[in-house]
Amino acid sequence: MICTIILQPESLHGSSGETFQQALEQALTHASGVIVDLLWVGTVDSDGINLLAQSMIRSQASGKDITFLGLEHNAKLELEHRIQCSVESSSCNSTLGHGVFAPDFEAFLDRHRDLKASEALI
Image 1: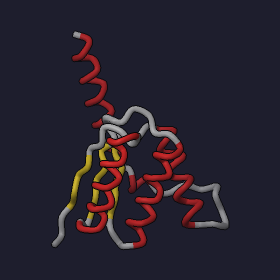
Image 2 (image 1 turned 135 degrees about the horizontal axis):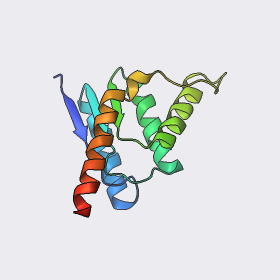
Image 3 (image 1 turned 180 degrees about the horizontal axis):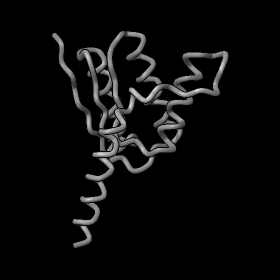
């Protein structure tokens, strides 16, 4: 069966993080592709980056697609760096291509988040 599962965690920490990690493992096992929408996740610490990097590496090894959306810029750079270091253990200075994060959709999510924030102020 070919399907894509969309996950939208509220947090990568605590019980919400554990629930997300279990859902992500199941999605990577059963779906041909996974989209992880991180729009509602505030900050992603080192443990969260490790979780996302391991998920990306696992998806690549199994030939499945995974996309992270709404990830904060610095966290995205750190994630790309960790994945690249894992893939190319000889060089940790370059980053992955732009296909992983769908830049046009990232811009849409940023505008949506800004709109929601401005509506909350009204």
